[in-house]
Length: 157
Ligand SMILES: [Zn+2]
Image: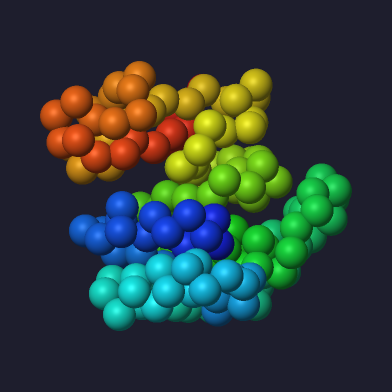
């Protein structure tokens, strides 16, 4: 599940080998030409654009009102679609660098992955992994694959 930051940083290529999903609202959030180009490149490959069911959107919206997270419709849509996948027992990882998105998704027990240093490090434990070989590492670049590593929230903290 890809949030807008992935396209803004032109990093959708990192997810070439997995099924990736985003919502139409995320496309609307992309303003710069390079971010749009990255979105269209991914769309032509393995990126699927879907809308969450209304009930999931309402559920996430209600929770964000309660926890006073400042979320856009795009933010809510991406968390709602992640929740919908999760409740259908699909493995889902939400990729977002947005603190509020990371935090709310974590409260719903959705696995979160961050491309930059996570801001909610105080509340959750993170590890750095290579998305190609899954090896845990402390470096920016995987020593085996030479690919950029990402942050992932540890389960059962
Ligand atoms: Zn690797």
